[in-house]
Length: 352
Image (cartoon, rainbow, N blue to C red):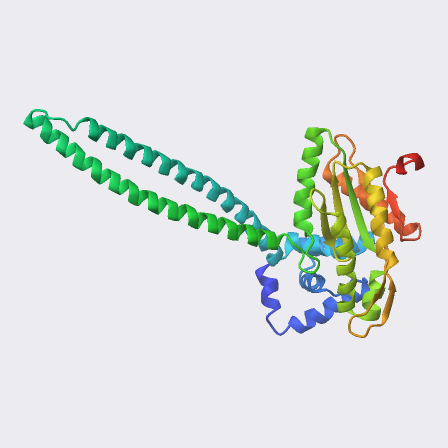
């Protein structure tokens, strides 16, 4: 946020702002996660800011302030979240540039080698018994040729070393990017990775005229787990659900932690009918196991999930596709939870 807010947070008014933020969060039933707390501290400090205006709009609309909402606000307004995105974008650009430079170096190395061979051939062809003047010219050319060949060898060695170093740097960038695109708690793709994968999947579905289905999955009554057992047990539940979803979301599919206790799956090439069968397997497997609290071995009971899915319509964009899947998820919630709902009807014959 602004430098003015940052200054307030390092001054005597910081504690007052923190108390106001917690009171506002409690009044609006917002869970005090680190991201949410930072957002609401900035909100109470600068309600007229763009972030403040967005939060006021959410409050006025009665929309639930979920982790997904908070993470989206953070990405737009909080410096650290924005910086992470900028770092990833810069890494992508640098990786592409390294590819270009590596190709240029390899081209230069091949050209240099070919030039040296041509000079050597010319030197041999001129090595004849000619008149003294021509012989002197040949000797001069031969000496120059040998010097260029030596320089070429040195250049080739340096180019090879530089190419290898660029390869190592590119590999390091890929590791950094992979880490930045992975959710630390579940090892699934994070929200940014999901957004990028969905954009690619939509483009491929349009160009190849192939089906594409997206599913959104939410853990039922997750807040109760956190309130009853604490965050560490809540994290245990999230990891368990993620492990089941991850097996279905193997390449070419994408499984992601969409935010908080919500997950998403991309099914490129799969119809809603095919995805529904897989998602029902996921739902049933998750609910079939009674979890135990690791620290005390107490029974946590069964965990259930609600699922919504939508198959891409011709010409439909990714925003509409996700919104329809999300609407189907809330149909599952309203219908009693622990069920899967499709945005468009699937007949019993099709679902079989």
